[in-house]
Image (cartoon, rainbow, N blue to C red; front, side, top):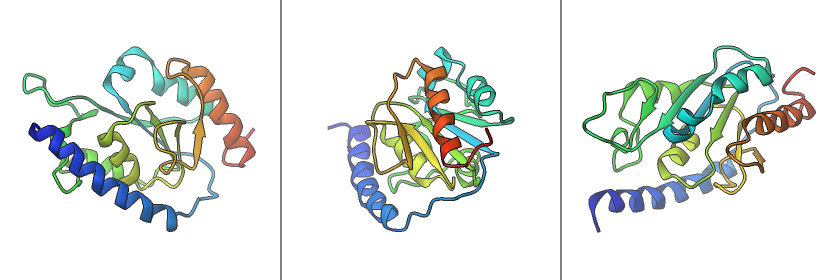
Length: 173
């Protein structure tokens, strides 16, 4: 077993333990949504214009987005991506700009990924966002709102998200 698989296994075990504690202490904010954070995979971010579609549909501005990409020492360091090297074996993010993103108290955090990814799941879990939404089938303990949609249907996903946020009175009509 190589070190990256061992690290992922250790992180998964710690994550599962922490997420069960989170459910017991979860409180959902009734605050209206003004600030939005988005977590996704690099492949999805390059294919789809997620940020602008979400901003347009929800009627917000200045959302912030980070993407997960696999580490490659030949790649330049980016301020909008994080890698598995940005998290230590204890499950703490060591990259300061990404940690400040997670520490921001967003009114809404959108996990725009539909496959299990321990690094993205830990990031969603550690985010200080007051309301979290994402895709069904990733991890039902992470989100207050899950939407069943294909990842490529960004407009349908955001329309459905907007509909439920309006029902919950977190967005104006």
